[in-house]
Amino acid sequence: MTAYDVDLVIVGAGPSGLYGAYYAGFRGMSVAVIDSLPEPGGQISALYPEKEIFDVAGFPAVKGQRLVDELVAQAAQANPVLLLGEGALDLRHHEDSVEVVTDAGTVVRAKAMLLTGGIGTFTPRELPVGEDYLGRGLRYFVRRLDDVAGHDVVVVGGGDSAVDWALALEPLARSVTLVHRRPAFRAHERSVATLRSSSVRVLTPYEVSKIGGEHLVGEVVVDRVGASGQDDRDGRVTLPAQTVVAALGFIADLGPVQQWGLELRKRHVLVDRSMRTNLPRVFAAGDISDYDGKVRLISVGFGEAAAAVNNLAPLVNPALGTAPGHSSDAA
Image (cartoon, rainbow, N blue to C red; front, top):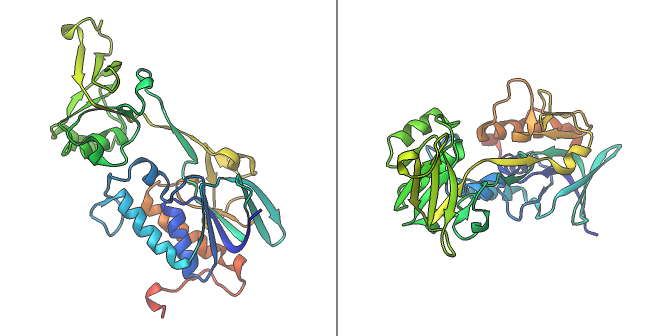
């Protein structure tokens, strides 16, 4: 059994967790970071490393993986213990510390915990047809845009992810068609406006009825919702395709966190203004946290992580105050 003693244990290596690790190091704390994914970056690295992100302060636009790489480099200044590929399984409370046990049997004892687990573990919502083509042209996200360069791509979905994928793939693909079963999109208004003015073919209200091809995806058949679907005149369209991106959303699961006794609201952990949860020495920040007026943005998560670290600082060392001073004043 491997064991670590640190000042702060962070559960979740997404943007908020990585920034929290850096900031804890800035406040003089030792840190361990636990994440069930095999690499840091959370949803960004797993789902959209090649997509442009536009709402992070200081970057007019930044690709997801570049942002993660910069956050990892920043966090490295704290020399954190990185326990990747290990899920936080059990939380134990002691008088002056907390103890986290991972599913790999690792034990981390810390004076405080910062929970930055995003939406928890997530699995994609499956496309109702063509699941046997998964890995043979059907995918739920694109790790490298160049993988589909020159392809005819069909993106399925009506949320932000579907619209973003369609726009990101447009410059590289031979053609991009976005299929959504409803007339209206559930995406950001600016993104939808950009989509409408792009070369992406938009088919609404349509849904995928069949994916074809001998071994790899070769075509996608879509039917207009409510039509008989017998031929083109009745609303059936056959699209050439080598890649289908099913961007239908994800099912989130907090997993063992739900059994720790945290006060939850719709799968989010309730916190007060100091980012403190109802459990002693446990704080939360980023997408997993919730309070009245919460706004779920990466930039907000950074601020919440800093607020949490400053407010838990006296638990780590009574000589530390909650007022951090300015980084520009550091030697």
